[in-house]
Image (tube, rainbow, N blue to C red):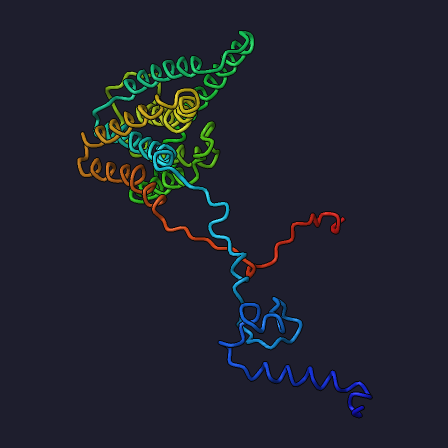
Length: 334
């Protein structure tokens, strides 16, 4: 018997020769489980053991774990258009509010006329809101109406009393700065508005809109022909602007959300009607602004959903991803 076989070194020498032979093979011949050598030296997806393969080698089984677009939600175009209509609606509200301010700034509308019109809109909207409400007990409905009346009375009383003070807040500020602050606050209102649940609006969004209305009201001219109980004619302008800001930016979103939940078809018609009114009202004073508003509404409502649908989405997951720990680690933190 040979000496190396007797002392047990024959097996080690044979394994070393096989390892050196496989390392001299070219990568095209060294296919692991995909070739004839797979039965001798199979490739394993490990890093802690030396293998007779290049560092960047993988076999065909590696791509069997490839997963493409896992959990991807496919959107429908018209469903996205309906959701984008909320953004277009809020842009239209801002445009309508600016249109009312332009009419008052040019003396085409008196504050008293807007106040009576706003009161009529509030009564009609509240009745429509109650009609869309789910049927309940008469006691709870009576309690809700009484609470709403109390809230409206408190708001009107405080706004009416503080109107002479609010109109003087920006007297020492230049007009350009006031307009810049108004644009910034209206933009913040559009960005921070809770489109997912617009009933009731978020506090920051509503406060930004009210601050913008105060800034605009401070630049309205006084109306000496207005017969009111206020000491200063401009105070009535401030009171009117704040009331319409609450109506447009707080009460209308609540009614719109109720209409969207109870009557989806009617909600689409109202969105189209509001867009037409916004473009037409702004076009009566500023045709260029009406064209710009129509372009923005068309882009937000029709173009942006189309881009979202057509956007190339190709997400791949596989064994190269980072390891995910699915075990609850809360017990280790106690």
